[in-house]
Image (cartoon, rainbow, N blue to C red; front, side):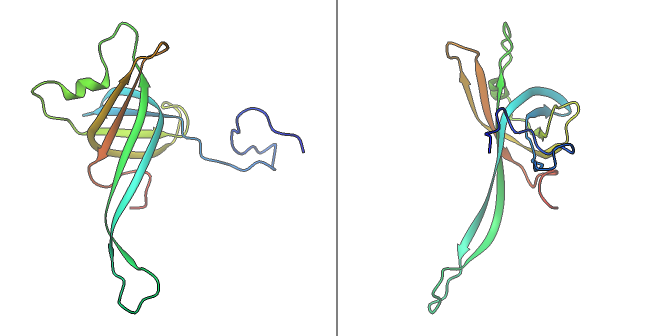
Length: 151
């Protein structure tokens, strides 16, 4: 069997042996409907706290779910000649704004939203190696996501 070269791009009607996959590519962040960031390389991390409900005679440990949370991490490039970067969300003397983040399965203009939620920025990193400068930030969810999980 020959090895497939190049990236796997999902299902193809003309090639029924391929399986369809969800391709997450781009994301964006906005404050009050105003776009502030075009993003790539994003991920969502969900976490649910639990309590131990194991009884004295149980042979296997048992857990009960309690509250859940999510965190959105993404990267973006800094536009050359611009001082605008995501670190400005922590401007001196201002309160952190709630952001809306949306992750797409394709381009932002034509893709399908596969995650959307609101949250506060919780971390920011700016990397300036000897190549393109990148910025990375994390958004701590504020309530349940509106797209990406069953309501």
